Length: 136
Image 1 (cartoon, rainbow, N blue to C red):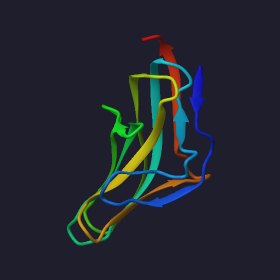
Image 2 (image 1 turned 90 degrees about the horizontal axis):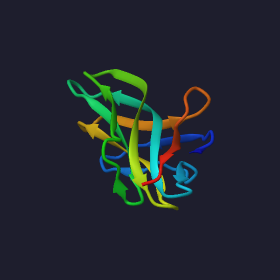
Image 3 (image 1 turned 90 degrees about the vertical axis):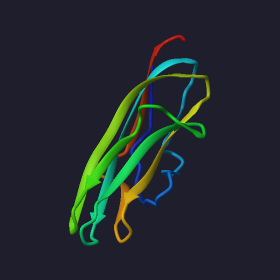
């Protein structure tokens, strides 16, 4: 059994603290308990415009209000005057209960004067998918 998000339009500027990527359609609800293979891809745009600095977009899956171990991905770099677009993601195996909600969180990491955002449009999509593997 598979569950996944549909095609969404997103343009969200990142802050330095992890925050949920909206809209709320970018979540999946696990239909029944078991071990699930969960994967995501997230398109980020990083602008490292400040002199001699680096900047990254960090993404991670959350189960409810808790981060999922092993699901963090990082895209970005530097030095200055770099605009980078990249699609990063992870795949993890994890145990879930029925009706657990899985969502994508993201944040920017680096020096002030730079910025990052998460995008999803026809040029590159953000998605979360889960495939049931076995009972716990």
